[in-house]
Length: 294
Image (cartoon, rainbow, N blue to C red; front, side):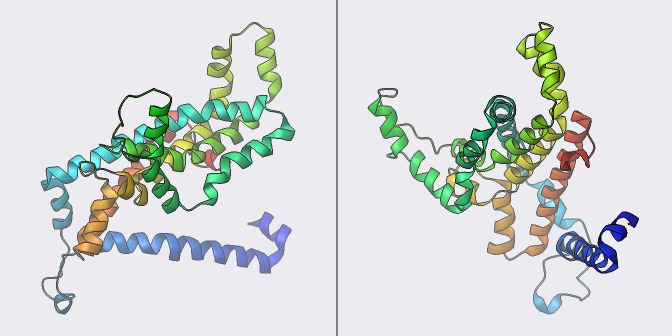
């Protein structure tokens, strides 16, 4: 506080604190508190809201635990979101290392430009593009058949295949950038010293690069998992009839059934899941929450 006052003065400090408080209370805390409060209230006609029947209970949460369908979709969302996170980590780490320690500095911005170009297009359009690419008569099957890698078209949009591909393509950069930022901060002299001492490449990464990159890896895993678990456009467009995402169930309760209370309970369970995942990832990588923001 003293540092802020010394650097910016009273007026700017109060402005910064006011905007931060507005963001935390109005945009973050208040919506989640409303979601939490509605999740315990029953779904009633408008004329009965606030009446004798409008009491708090766990009935909305019981709806989730009583249905094996909801439990199955919930755990499949957890499983495939974790799978997307793992794939993103495996793909992003070598690319991030290449950009941070191998690529020429004057060429790095060009590579970043190429990588970030898909982000210029909305997620909806990217999902529609993947739907066309992965369709039975789409360009992917046509190209693979043209080079004789397959003899007949493949149904890519069966099960969760399309969802995994779409989510990976959409959120992989949220894994790449934090890891790149962490590796870039590593002193290159440590890598060169290990090489001079005869350490193989895998040991250099295991003992030097990866431990230094833990905050970036944890931050990337948290973001990719949360974005994947909370995605709605990609799973809606790229899922098959046999594959459902948990956010689709929340949307159905809120907008199709108009039961915002049960939908709030389901949404709060998803929020709780993401909170648990963040906690587990921070414990697993032994980093603090503040370290992931560096």
